[in-house]
Every structure is written in C-alpha cells, then in structure tokens.
Image (cartoon, rainbow, N blue to C red; front, side, top):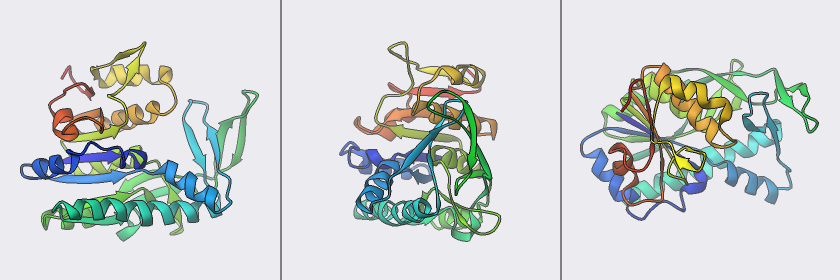
Amino acid sequence: MIVIKIGGSIVDGLHASTLHDVQDVLSSDRLVIVHGGGKEVTRIAGLLGKEQRFVVSPGGIRSRYTDKETMEIFTMVMAGKINKEIVSMLLRHGVRAVGISGIDAGMIHAERKKKLIIVDERGRKVAIEGGYTGKITGVDTALLNMLISSNYTPVIAPVAVGDEYEMLNVDGDRAAAYVAGALKADRVLFMTDVNGLIMDGRLVEHLTLDEARRMLPRIGHGMEKKVLACTEALGMGVKEAIIASGKVENPISSALKHINCTVISNGRG
C-alpha cells in the first residue's frame, strides 16, 4: 500500500501523465491520497476579508494560526472545494475516488493545542492561545480499510476531530505520515514542486532515518515539515518515505523507482 500526499498548490501543476500514472499504480497496488491546499485557503480567506496570520515555532516550523473564523474557512476550502476538485479529476480518469476528511468517522483524532510557543519578530519565545490547531494523536483506519477493500481510492482532507468533537487544522504532511503509519503502508510519497530535499545546492538522494533526524534543524521553511513527516512515518513502521516532484512525467512511478528524488529509509536504499 502507498500513501501519497499532494500539495493543493501543485494540483494545477501536476504533469499531464499523472492521472494515467495513478491508474497504472492502482493496477498493482492500493493507494490512499492525502492533500493539502494552504495557498488556496489563504486566497479564499483574502476574498472573504479574513487576513491570515502565520507563526514560527522555536524549531523553525512555520504554520497557519487558526482562530475560529479561519478554521471555518479552512474546513470549507479543504474538505469542500479542493477535496471535491481532486475527486472529480480522478473520477474523470476512471479512478473510483471517494473524498473524505479526517473528521469523518472520527478517522484522524487530534488534541487541541491550548498554547503555542512561537518566536516573535524580535526572535523572542512567547506563548499565545492555541486556537484551532491540533496535534494528531491517532488514526482510526476502519473507514479507510472498508473503502480500500471495496476498491475505492480514499482522498483525505487534513481536518481532524478534537476531544470535544471540534474541527481542528492539522498539517497535511504529518496527516499523511500518521495515516501511512496506521495503515502499515509500505511507502509514503510526498509530491511537491521540487525534486526533493536540496541542501547546499544539490539534491539529497538518500538518507537514513537517523541522518534525516540529525539534519532537520538545518532544513529551511517548507521542506522541514516534509522531512519531519518522513521521519514520523518511518518511526511508525512505514518502510520508505519519498519526497519527489509532481511536475515530471509519470511522477508516482518515477518516484517509486527512486529517479531524481529524495528517499529516506531505515537503511541505505
């Protein structure tokens, strides 16, 4: 089984061969798709007059600050607009896709963060209210297993359910990692708009899990979440994590063959 994370911003930029590639992969394996869409959330929020705020953790992780209004917009765009656009695109190419979110059947459970420690403009650590951001605590795979066993391809929006049944914003990359871990997936693939992890101007082709963990503090905004998610997935038993471009021909098959991408594993792949 393969879990694929696609960024909402690359859906329009996916190579024309991608959907045929999905069909080819499905002929020999099972797929679960997790998607993002942060840029579209920001765009729609702007149209609605809701300015978005982004914060940076002491570890350098940049994230959206999610107050109640932002959570409403996030859910509307992620679980509605983007999710159904992806499902429609897959259906058009013969893939039996089903769009769901992490809140459906209580699939992705998260703990609402009461406080966030962030770094302010002066570089000081400060505590702010946690808003509607969640830390994933578990994935119930019952619904996913039912869909997969019936030959459907789940497409998951990263909206989780909290302890009080509130909807929470969770990071899409980390949601993919937790879904992959819970499903005991063989591989998790993070498709993005670059070939993989670039360090010192060069593509890093292979890393062990320990190497990736040690490298995390030196990785810049954007890619650090993907590498963190890779390490989390591997820590939960996934055999291999890949970061690859969605803009190349047959991007899934190419990544699974380790062509021009970053592969992280418990050994030297």
